[in-house]
Image 1 (cartoon, helix red, strand yellow):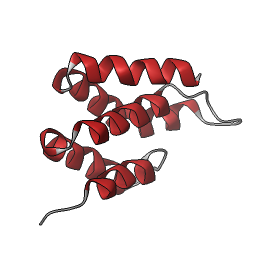
Image 2 (cartoon, rainbow, N blue to C red):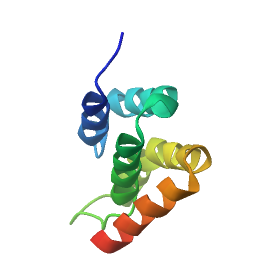
Image 3 (cartoon, one colour):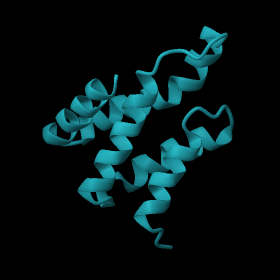
Image 4 (cartoon, rainbow, N blue to C red):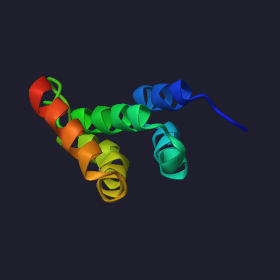
Length: 100
């Protein structure tokens, strides 16, 4: 089954910040389809994940729950840093730094 690229990006954006099965489903999906995604969508996915992991804590956010919830995203981010091109990584990290 072919899924439009925008659905993949939307799935990531939906799952970021969630604390349910959807996180592991989405991170596993990204690992499966990464090489087939067009460069632009790869950049958006990488940037969104890095922005999420670098965000400031919400008021009254439990640090342990945040760490546990972000663990799958950190694993994926590490995997993406090994799988993405240096240009994709540099562009995403530049965007995240600018957005701070």
